Image 1: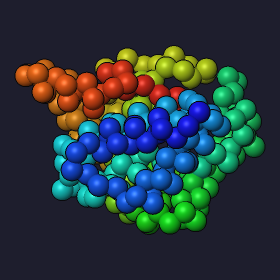
Image 2: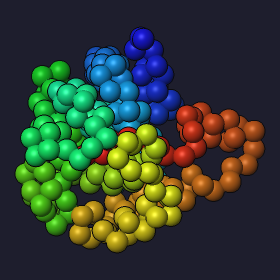
Image 3: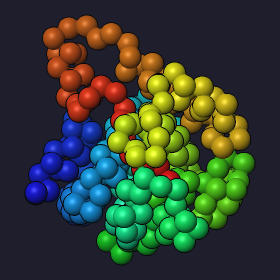
Image 4: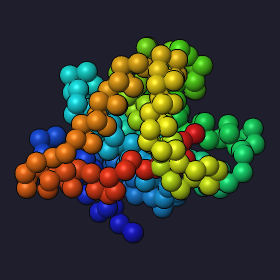
Length: 236
């Protein structure tokens, strides 16, 4: 295995016109490569969340802010799972209280890891708070997500939708997209930021729209590969 796959994935997600700091890009590729070796399903999940987040960012860049933050924050949101035993991440059985504590600790662990590597605070916030809830009661702080930047709330929604619809989870079957949309709408304004839910649905609708022209079809294949469907694993 090499870091080439992670590098190509980041470059494809960035597209043309979005520049990444060379040092941070190198660090991100290294972390993603480590995650792929530690738990391949979490690596695949991270790229799927990043792909959906970038679709949301392209639909509303003014709202979600810096594109590099959106990309690196979403791609590295689960970096802390490097410090979670792979046996917990891949467990087909319900987790014990201690195992769940270990898994939930990935949020703060990821933020700490990224901080040591020089990533900026908005990216750290995505890692630390993507499991917080709109009305509060999530983890690790339990604070309402209105206190966090819009990109944090966007990644939280992208993470949840991806987790619901992706295959590869030993403890349940993936939901159809329609059922996952219904779940987001049911939790809109309680677990999830209403505007982030609306933005995700807008991004999905734009991706589902037919493309015209040879170049448009080519760009569509580049941006959507691998599979057109948003897949993923482990969404603790």
